[in-house]
Picture 1 (cartoon, rainbow over the protein chains, first blue to last red):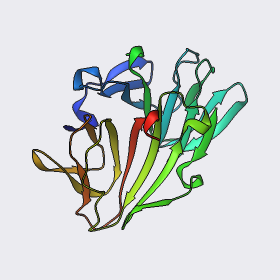
Picture 2: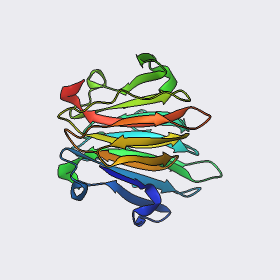
Picture 3: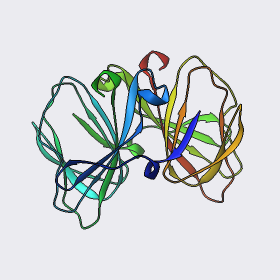
Amino acid sequence: MKVSNYHDSEAIKEVEGVLKREVITASDGAPNYIMRFFEVETGSSTSSHSHPWEHEIFILNGKGVVVGEQGATPIGKGSILFIAPDEPHCIVNTGNEHLEFICVIPIQQE
Amino acid sequence: MKVSNYHDSEAIKEVEGVLKREVITASDGAPNYIMRFFEVETGSSTSSHSHPWEHEIFILNGKGVVVGEQGATPIGKGSILFIAPDEPHCIVNTGNEHLEFICVIPIQQE
């Protein structure tokens, strides 16, 4: 069993204004999927892209929008996002505090 | 893309004092793993058990302990737990507010 805090994982700059921490990885023994913790600064956004794997996301803190083919949908603390394989998407912080979320992806994408 | 709030998923009584919401499931199109939201009342505990699949857990709120073969380890907001397949475990709320967490499991266990 691994018990830690998300702060224990190194913060990696993903793009400008976006930090990523890989909090559960294959090196912990995870056989199927990994968990990452993201922190998006006010006014910043994750990169707008698509890829052949899914995202399962829980919004921990802050306010923003998720932008997909259907346009922009408001998100905030307690929001759940399922982004299917190959769906274009980005997450934008439109609030005045950090937008924090958990994102789980299949392990072959690590 | 599915965008919702964890409150939108029905709360199911898992054991006494423990509510479970299945927030991302196969019916949403999830191909590999599902996300659940748990709420444990003060003084209550998830069932102590083991099973041949892993848990990836993020603690959202509250205070407690995770009990495994190594004994009891304190957990709280921001804690990360990786429980490997076949590891005995339970999560106990030792604080004075609800202990809330996200738990991701492989989809074949739904």
